[in-house]
Amino acid sequence: MKVKKSIIINAVHSFKTNVNSVKYMFKHIFKYKEGKNYLFLKALAAVLSPMFSMALIIFPGLLINELSGEQRMPVVLLYIGMIAGILFCKM
Image 1: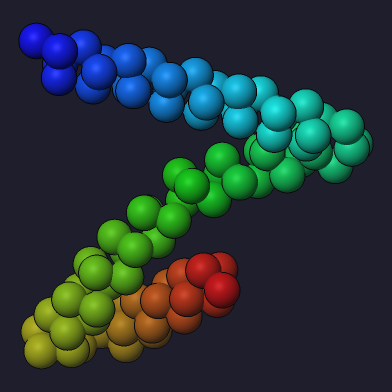
Image 2: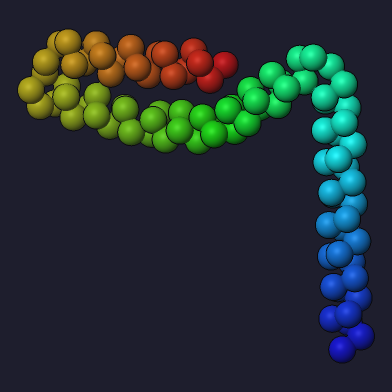
């Protein structure tokens, strides 16, 4: 019972420390006029990054299927362009 209590106390302390760190960072970020833009762009990057990764998994397979199937050149070029665009945006 004593072990469970200390685990809970450590978890609560860790949570409070994290909340205080986040509060400090928000205060520090919002001091600057670009802070809101930075926060928005970081949140957008966090959402888009998994989407880019998923697209980089899907599009090469679609490209291979198109090359081994109907071989429509506009579609092949579209897939190649999308892969290149995603890689460029990911940099």
